[in-house]
Image 1 (cartoon, rainbow, N blue to C red):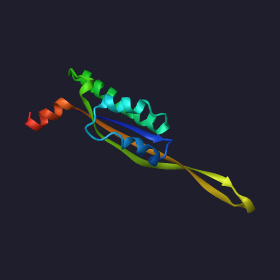
Image 2: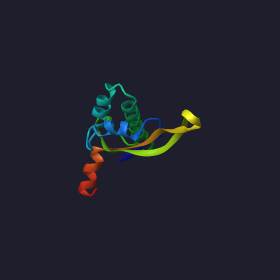
Image 3: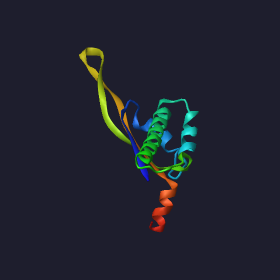
Length: 126
């Protein structure tokens, strides 16, 4: 069973969020990834942690609607990707009537979570 969470238009640049998404390699247990990000006090880490928790909640919600008994300690992170989002542009006044453009960069975060048991079942062909 798979679940996905998408956080869109996050007010943190893609490069700052990528630092923390790279700390979570595919196959990491979801609870371990959330615990690892809990102690990092930056906005990028908090946003990635929020997306992971949302994917976990989505997985539990899918399981309860289909009457499937799941254990959240077996959830693994399949993919964490950070994409560029449109930037907000602000003008900064400069000398002699000129202006510089300040780009407030944004990002989208996509997290995919799966259940270990279903991966093993798919490998056997069940």
